[in-house]
Amino acid sequence: MKPKYWLTLLLGLIIIGFGIYWSLKKSDFIYSHVIGQPVDSLNGVIVYYNGDIDNVSGRNTTTDNYNLGLKYQCVEFVKRYYYQHLHHKMPNSFGHAKDFFDPDVKDGELNAKRGLIQYSNPSISKPKADDLVVMSGTNFNKYGHVAIISKVMENEIEIIQQNPGPSANSRVTYKIVYTEGKWKIENDRILGWLRKE
Image (cartoon, rainbow, N blue to C red):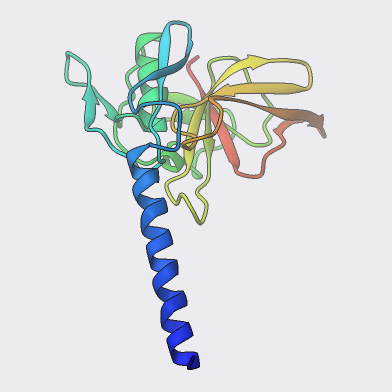
């Protein structure tokens, strides 16, 4: 056979294979959960399964029209957690996950857009349970990620998250270290954390 025929055949098989994979991924066939299914909770606030990280199932607002975010994205969970458990409404109720961290706010000062005290990574303040962790974007997720610190131990923290990916866990632990008078969460994507005082 001619080389051009093999190239056309190979390209066709790649396109068909990608199409099948994409269809299965979008249909949630290859995963054990259904979009909107509860998978975890913290202090009575439920974490819902979202399938693909870019899946959107509409906007979630409260009865008083406060914007919680797009179902069942990471932002929607952290804002719902702060609203239901900590009774906190953010002055700016919109924005992507990475935008929750304001680089112009100094460590330990008020992030006025969120109505929360902001700590940089590393920070003078050790992370606490209920802090909102902010992560930078990646090549695969330019919007960043947010989560809630569910537990703080001596040398590590546990976070709870919504929409970490179709087969990722809702809970993850990271090491924390104290050096030169500051606490650092050992993950280069973590920009910092926010706290209701």
